[in-house]
Length: 311
Ligand code: SF4
Image (cartoon, rainbow, N blue to C red):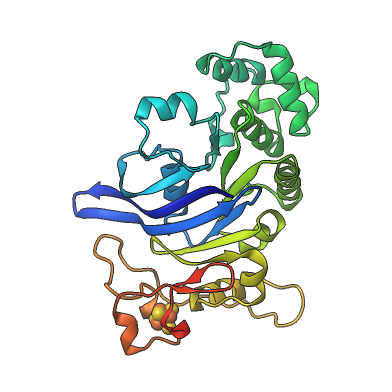
């Protein structure tokens, strides 16, 4: 059964120069128990996609499309119904850089209590906080500490715990390992794997394709506001189809074999007046005349690819 689906979603930001179409006609779906990794360069629309699912797009707006959770449209709900019944309860988010926004003058316990109060939690606060701290692999002594007394990895676990407080079914984690050292990155990835094992679906947003395979069965590759390839992680790692996905995978530094790290020349197009055809045209080694037309969408074994090479 389809757990969550995003259909033809368009989200933009109004600027003096025009609308920046940060998410442009994006579609994907997950079955029950599946997780997805969203990868792409900075400013490709990954975070805006996550924020759109949370219906929190600062200074932006969702122009069209639909998002359904367990068959029910969450975009057609009123703002108040979504805030009361879905945001944080069914769908929750670990925002990019959130560990740096923990309030330095309050203890971890006070920050948890604040969130529970805001959501009118009527159970036992102490028990709830103790359980959630346990579930993210931290010891009980962190509860009375201030953020400055915690390491980066501990703070990241605390912000993940805050996102998990109301037992959501779907958690969006935006760059949860960025700015952490590799050992702490591994701890956070292991924590996400454990949450997934416990039955949670995760959307892992990252610029690092290497970590997605650890957590997600599905991958969505974004480029200049579009999802240009979507499918099973196994298929995309083994046989990436879109030239951009191929280039992205080749740019991961390797310990063995070819020591030359590849990079993608050029830069993405403006999202205010993007080209009508394939947005990767200027950087693509296989570009053809017909790529200047509207980019196509061809079915693959587990999803789709938006490239004329697969006509
Ligand atoms: Fe390259 Fe054309 Fe495919 Fe775009 S549609 S990625 S330009 S081959």
